Structure formats: C-alpha cells, structure tokens
Amino acid sequence: MEEAAAGDGGPGPLGVRARHIKKRALKNKTLSVSFNEKDLKDFVTGFHKRKKKRRKEALQKQEEADRRKRIEQRKKNFWQSVVTFILTLMFQRKLERDFVMFGGAPPDSGTDAPESDGEHDGDEDEDGEPVPSVSDAWIRLGSIVFVVIQQKLDIKYAARFAAAVAKDL
Image (cartoon, rainbow, N blue to C red; front, side):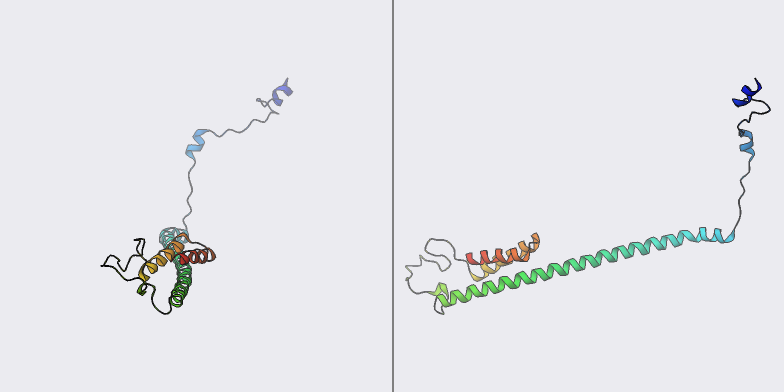
C-alpha cells in the first residue's frame, strides 16, 4: 500500500508532492528596485527624444509627399503642354488650309452672294446656324486640352481625339 500511496502523489516518504506557493508568501515578498542613474536619465530624457523623433519622421513624410506632388504636377504640365502644342499645330494647319482654299481671303469675306437688306448677319451661314469664329475654335480646343488633362488620357489617344475634333472645326 505504501507504493500505491507513493505512486499517486499522496503524502508519504517516497511520494513527491508538488510545491505550492502560499498566498501569504506571495504577499510578503518584497519588490527589489535597482537604482541606476543612467537608466533614470535615459527614461526622463527619452520623452523629449521620442517627441523629436516623431516630429522628424513626420517632417520627412511631408517632404516626401510634397516631392511626389511636385513630380506629378511636372508630369501633368508636360503632357498639358504637349497636347496644347499638338492642338495648336493642328489648328494652324486648318487655318492655312482654309486660307489656301479661299485664295488668300478669309472665308467670311466672300463677295459671291450680295447681302439683301441686312437679312444676312455676318455670324450666321445660310441655314441660320452661327459660324464658329477663331476665338470659338480656341475655346473648343482649350476645353479639349482640359478634358484630356482632367481624364489623364494617353497622349496618343488625345492626339487622335484632337485630330477628330479639329476636322469638325
């Protein structure tokens, strides 16, 4: 029977019982604090150092965001100038074509049909629709450039789009 008692962890000379730490022993245990001046100084000055570090990181993050924004703006301005240049060339070619077609005279100054009693206004054609002036064409081209830049269209697509619109001018 002694072996049985010893085998199941019960009290006995051979049985080893798990040590149990009593609550009273835990309450009476004192906490030991080692005082190190270097550690204290690091702790106290650490608040300021960490704050400076956070500010520095935030400033670097802001500078990086500004740099990216400037790069994006440069890209946008470049493509805007390219599209504007293409549209300007297309418009100049259209004006040159019209100039050659009408023999050096502007298209609205033709004297083929005499005006009758002020019925015919200089800004309208025979159908009564207003004839777009040069400034209207520039406004239209400007809006195309704005659409191209606003939608971030591919420059090849923008050139085809501008060519299609220039044909309508």
